[in-house]
Amino acid sequence: MPADAAAALIRNGDNVGMSGFTGAGYPKAVPPALARRIEEANGGGNTFRIGVWTGASTAPELDGALAKVGGIEMRLPYQSDPTCRARINAGEMEYVDIHLSHVAQFVWSGFLGKLDVAVVEVAGILEDGRLVPSSSVGNNKTWLDQADRIILEVNSWQSAHLEGMHDIYYGTQLPPHRKPLPIVQPSDRIGEPYLRCDLNKVIAVVETHSPDRNSAFSAPDENSRLIAAHILEFFQHEVRKGRLPKDLLPLQSGVGNIANAVMAGLNDGPFENMTAYTEVLQDGMLDMIRSGKLACASATAFSLSNDALSRLNADLERYRERIILRPQEISNHPEVIRRLGVIAMNGMIEADIYGNVNSTHVMGSKIMNGIGGSGDFARNAYLSIFMTPSQAKNGAVSCIVPMASHVDHTEHDVQVIVTEQGLADLRGLSPKQRARVVIENCAHPDFRPALRDYSKRALERSPGRQTPHLLEEVFDWHLRALRGEPM
Image (tube, rainbow, N blue to C red; front, side, top):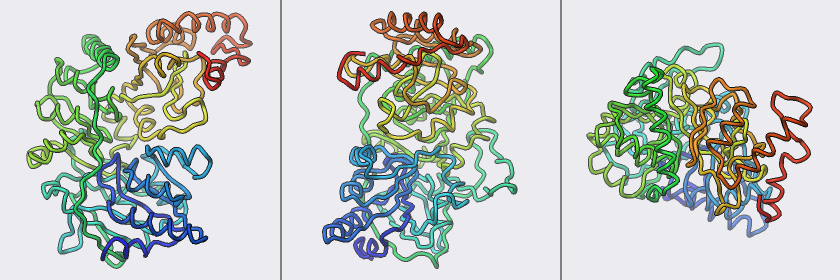
């Protein structure tokens, strides 16, 4: 049926599980049609709002369109749309920021309420009803299993060569019936290449031919190149010390230009036969597969520029043998991350001098995007690395502060902090020792004297000497920034 007819089957108050992860594999036709229907209903004096659950961020025609018409009551688990973000920060939309590996368990356990409808993009439907997954997997397995009603979008734009790339594992269970996941290296396949679907629940099939939203990545700037260089030098040091093998350990990398710069550095660096166990496959990792530096990459979705996507689709049959797309409850599973000894590299908004990291909130209260999968990897990684430029807002704001205004990753989960200024290895250091290393290695020179002064005075006057703080001034920098004054 057409998208408008399918959207008419979604009711006010429904919780809707949508496919999509970082702009890949999201439904292209039903969400805009639903937004038009919601706008008409709300304009006529009726209230029409739904819960929107996804894998991660999607695209303007999903998150943006529904948020613009006030159609989202609750959003989870991760978003990056400007309109959606504005509504959340204005208090007009509820938002649950949750570790990506936890979503499936929360839904199966009923913590989030009933999932009424699944709207899932697929690349094809087989005669026996099995579904060929699209360019992301995310939470699609859970949506199809748990939803009362299912709407499928079959997108003929997606390459037929995607078939066989996926590894959908149906062995997960709730406690006390869980069993170990039999993954001992990133290339292990433990499931099947198709999604299962109860055809009796399918209420609509919508045919589409629309591309994914592809994010263009700018060329690495000087700060990104310096951060990448510090990380590569650190890896070489760890190999010499015998703490990393010469082909490193499986890599995980967050999304963004700094992450792509690190991958570019690794592609040009001395390491061979590397692997990745990550959640998103970006341009940099695709380049590493193409060059032969990366032997295998396991993820749950693509997040590619237009150029990289063209290269992928032109040779997808060859890439398919070296890329595995899994459900995010597996790609982000703490058990597997710990077993494989993943090297986790993620971005942040700010870090404090003791190593606590804020990756979600600006000035303590305004959400940016969400924690995503960074927490899944940081707490369980063999190496947990967080990276950022040392300052923001054209030098008006320091990204190294006395105390983080919001903490997503505590000092116990953060092993290495990197800025363009240098790298702070925090392993085995007490809080006071970490403060010295972070200030001297990572803070921008313009802010270093003030941080030294704060640390010295805190050590002299703080009632406790383990993690010295001056509570009466610890957020002064943030308050001045909110007033438009220099930090």
